[in-house]
Image (cartoon, rainbow, N blue to C red):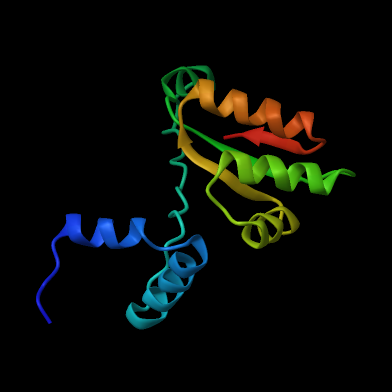
Length: 128
């Protein structure tokens, strides 16, 4: 089989349905023993003697963490799907596994917007 270029692969993916693409990703993960999930960022602790306010002022990326779904879990699942590229089952699993990070390494504006949307849907959210 001839080696495909990146552009040829992208063109092939564009022609696939979402279900076909999802099945491809699952098979790819199984074949190579990898996952397509975003890596979990580990927050570095501030050094000894560093004031907390100074550490907060320097922070330029935030993690949006869903602490609890609340009473309106369906609305929270809808918001998680809107904020991420997850499918219905993946979003439901993520919401049910709270506390979990929804977005990682986003800027302050995006983190605040996501927090507001999730809290509007009835969820309990923290920024880290």
